[in-house]
Amino acid sequence: MNRLPRILGEGRIRDVALVAFLGVGQAVAMGVAALSTRAVFAALHGDTPLVVTAFVLLGLAGCAVAGIDVLIRIRAESLGQSYARSLRTALYRQIAGLSAGDLAERRLGGLSLRFVGDLSAARGWVGLGLTRLASATVVLPGAVLSLWLLHPKLAVAGGLPVALSLGVTLGLAVGLGGMHKSLRSRRARIAVSMMVRLTIAPALDLAGRTPRELADLDDHSGVLKREAVARRTRISLLCALPQAGAALGGVAILWVAGASDVPAAEAAGALAVLAILMLPLRDLADVWDRYCAWRIARSKCQALFDRDSALREVRPVGHPVPVRFTDVRFRGLQIDGEIPAGTTVVVCGPPGSGKSSLLSLAAGQDRPDSGSVTYGSAGGPLPRIAYISDVSPIVHGSLRRSLTLGISPRPRSADIRKAALQFGLRPLLDRIGGTRGRVGEAGRTLSRGEALGVALARAALSRPDLIVVDSPQLIAHPKLWELIGRLTVVTTATLLVSGSDSAGAHRAMTLEMKDGKAIFHGDQTRAGPLETAA
Image (cartoon, rainbow, N blue to C red; front, side, top):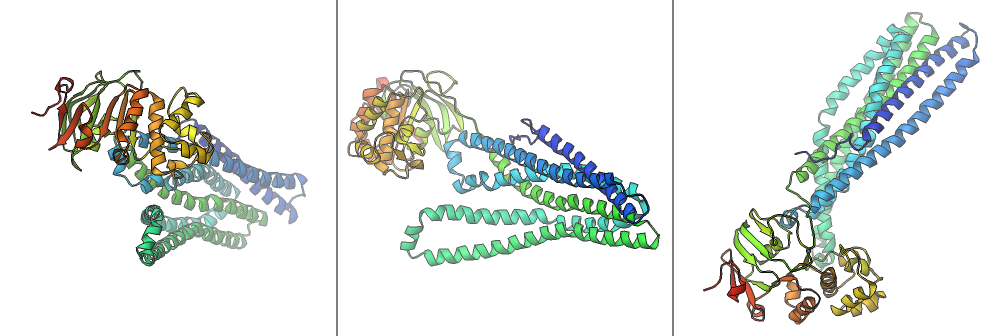
């Protein structure tokens, strides 16, 4: 299914039509300029009386061509930015709807390139490629017709070299797509590699890896340079060939005009039209270059859009909810049963037993391979879920903003500060000057403990129906159950916590992950239909 935004959608067809209309106006202006040039030359050689109108029309036509070119460029930029905006929105929506597991399998750098290189390619094709193509389809026939009407013999003489140069240009254009693909792939590998290594560069330096990393980077950069120069050489040739053809066409026009006693005015007009014809011909090489870049970017974007994605619909219910696993199969796990509403359950098991997978399913982060996860009713939206992990969604801006992310209506300032203090954020408040102090994107200006405190405070403020905790850092916290207890003071939500057997001993229920199955220990009257230990 093609989920890419339509290029001519969202009113963009009007911009394309406007560019084509402006192209018609430019072609007319060019034709007037050519005819006026002929009239002026005829007057200068004494063949006709000198008419001021011809000079005025020549000047106005030149100004019109320049002015229309400005308008075309403005509309082209608007068109390109409009499509880039639509594609950017569609890409983010698609990524937001991916499951956590699917997203984890994709390289962050590769996804980031969708928002940089691929968007640039889309903007370049729609804004500069498509609009120039639309303009050329109008200007080229108009220029050819004008040349023919001026003098058929001169049109043939000037057109043959141009046609030959176009044939050679088409031959060189065939391999440009492959060059684009190779260059893009190599550039992407370097960019993704650097995005990973830049975050660990000091550690690599400490390990003595810097000389090796620099050598690898230099080698890759050298290959990239050679491929980039080869592509630029091909593009330059594609742009130069029509110019060479037009130059030879001009020589042919002058030769035929001299040999056939064609009036100088006719030759001058033909040369003027030929100069006009050269501009869109040269643009066609750039059009093809941009199309090749967009075609590759489009395939990469489409591969992302082909992934299963659906935005999560959340509708708070205002009370604890049960979590029902109905014949769920996911990454080798088999789960079938229900966690009763309002219970606190510790999910335990050895590393790799599937604790995080079960909790991710319960939190709506992942979707099962088969079966379903429901919350008190079959299907329907998700309840309000507070998902606490070591990766907390913290955005650049005020601490207040991160503490109330996604919460509507926003709690009172006093309640926000109270929650921050309740979960150990007093030192942070003192350091940044209160809840209106600034924090960095993804919590980069916070310690891990502070980022965890933000997640806990946000969970308390959101009044969730279900709380899922899958944070090794919180599990190892010496005051784990004190912090969990503070959560239960302000909410009666169903609570699932990843922990150990010893942690589970403090709770009424423990869900053990063993041999790919979920087994309840504890109060069997509250265990529901999930498998219980003998």
